[in-house]
Amino acid sequence: MHLSVFDIVVLLTILFWILLIIHGRRQNPLGLPLPPGPAGLPLVGNVLNFPKMNSWLVAAQWRKEYGDLVYMQILGNRVIFANTYETAIDLLDKRSLIYSNRPRFTMMRELMGWDWGLNVMPLGPRLHKHRMFLRQFLHRNAMKRNHNILTLETHQLAAGLLNSPDNYLYHVRRATAAIIMKIAYGYDVGLSGDKYVKLADEAVESISIAAEPGAFLVDFLPALKYVPAWFPGAGFKRKAKAWRKLSQSMLKDPYQMTKRKILEGTARSSMMTDLVEQHTVQYGCIDGEEDIAACAAITYTGGTDTTVSAISSFLLALVLYPEVQTRGQEELDRVVGRDRLPNFDDRSILPYIEGIVKETLRWNPVLPGGGPHLLDKGDVYNGYFIPAGTTVLPNHWAMLHDEVEYPDPFSFLPERWILKEGQKEPRDPAKVAFGFGRRQCPGKDLADDSIYITVATILAVLDVQKAKDAQGQPITPLGRYRKGLISHPEPFDCAIIPRSPEAAAMLCHAIEGGE
Ligand code: HEM
Image (tube, rainbow, N blue to C red; front, top):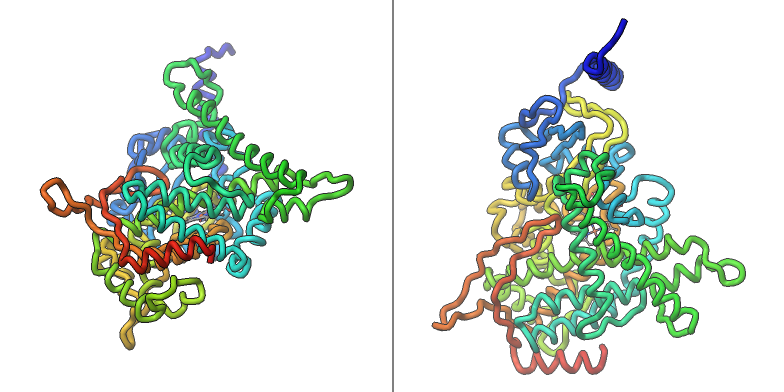
């Protein structure tokens, strides 16, 4: 019998579908339905209606139609949006044994060279090792040794905001970078134009673009990575090539700089010096150098832009909600007084300031789309079958704007956490904002401490207000956010002045004394 090419293609297609059905039956012997979701096209699935940007907003809308879990299939890749806290906890936390892998991230890991990054690393001993390294330096108790760094750099931030308020974003970025560079490498960031900060900013920007689900088709069709860079439509390959240099410099440059200092005997104690010491074996050789370099670098890449986003949202909230500033300052004056700056010991007796920290994490979440969790094994949930290989996207935005948990969710209301008798405390936003299960953010205590000390210090010494236009009328920021995986407010006008000459003098004194 002679078969034409057409016959062979048809036969192979039928065979493929039969194997797919047999495989599906094995995984799902009860023939349970998949969770509901928008209808897709044959074979390509939801490729046309998968949101390319801000997918969490679209998924929150879909929730009204399809429910807490919304299922989609894009070119054979299965994706589920988990729209509520309960579903995220049930799947990603309680069943974390099977829901803790990461998707393949072809663009980031394979083309841009971020395979060393903990955030995209598959489960396995390497991931475990990196998480243990970070835990050693960043968990709640270990953070105490970093409090001095956080306090000093936050004083510098307040001084920078006073001296050139128009550059507020620069000062926030510099302070966040300075804190993390000191913790990770013992390195002092300059007051302006630091080359490592510039490098990291560019690197983080490239990740923020590349890691957004749906941003690059190659993440759904990995075979596209073989398309030559000159081919029409292969712009992603050219981008990846340029961005790859950033990931490699980010991994190696600050590490080599610190290693040189260690050899010269001039390195300041840091995460990296401690790890190098712990892993130096015979003849001065360092065991697992790449792991140490990767952990220090991921602290920087994971920690800077995220914290900058939160602090920028706090500044925006102060401009839009002047009463929050007044109440926060009133609490600080009453509890801490006006003759010293607040510190970490004050935290437990500042409930309104604590409420501001919580609202900062909730109001406009830093990572509204959360971190993607890949399911390793077929699972059944609420009568639905979830196939192995499905990526679950926890919709942080929807969870943190849940009207039942947080009435009037789009307003910045720290008083939610000042409870009247018999009132139930709303869920702590940190339970959502830092993710779930085994992939929960390893920098959450550092982030939380950074936000607290920034809120307390800024309110103690500064007034952040609406700027005025040429006619002397106050300018109200629109409160819009840029698109992207990490959510930043669009640049807004504001006026930043000292609360009083005494407050400004106290700040200068604290910086001079390095208190
Ligand atoms: C306000 C600031 C921050 C927020 C809101 C935040 C949030 C998150 C979220 C949502 C995830 C994904 C969790 C998941 O997959 O379920 C994550 C992962 C991660 N974060 Fe953070 N983060 C912040 C600051 C930091 C800091 C300061 C560090 C510094 C070490 C850091 C390092 C990381 C790393 C390395 C991962 C990947 C963990 C893994 O995949 O196992 N983050 N973060």
